[in-house]
Image (cartoon, rainbow, N blue to C red; front, side):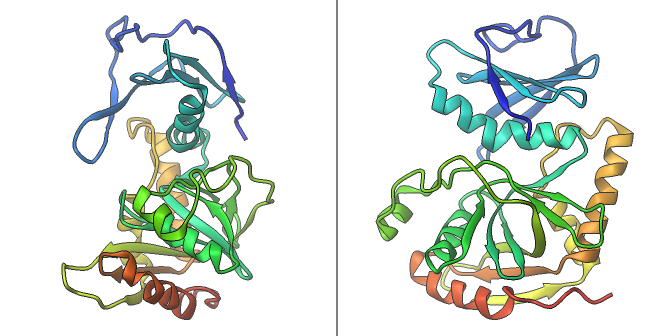
Length: 280
């Protein structure tokens, strides 16, 4: 799905210092501390993203690939990682495929996805479930198709990336999973919104959310290139409304620290995995 093609150069609107070569309205993506991760713009239907120190990427609704022109000295692995974790989800969005910022595992009833802000524990939880026999499905990006009664999770290439303290806890290498995904689409069985409890609160709480309460929190974990295109925005809202109407959404609240992980996994297996179809 939208393969990456690397080329030495592109006729890009971005100059080598990241500035744009004409008067364009830029989209800006920032990380948790406010630092700029990427700039983007649209020219005649073609979408551009510039990730400083990595590459300039080109994609669009009419293009069947993502093209990257790496910056001098950028490693091939760094360019591919940026494509997988950031550019591909945005490229899919502009083609009408929605993507959640989530990790996921494949269970007997389908895919269970974990949405959260960075460093909340979604990759750690997915990896821990993988060690219990569930198949790792995604890390950072879960694409879905809500055009049918059973919402489908769409397979994307990925690599699980664990923080050093988590790798040490499990004795794992990084990346854990090769960046290939041979699986076919699978039913999206459940979604979990992960939240950290207050310091000192060790309780693990799992609660199912009504669709009306799940909509906005899930939307906050969506990938989107721009909200300026009203037709694209309307389609996005319709797909997320269909998602919360057809897939059960849970809030999972837990304390900090890896010592909480066994209780978190037990709560997921008890209250989320294998849930029944959502009631209407």
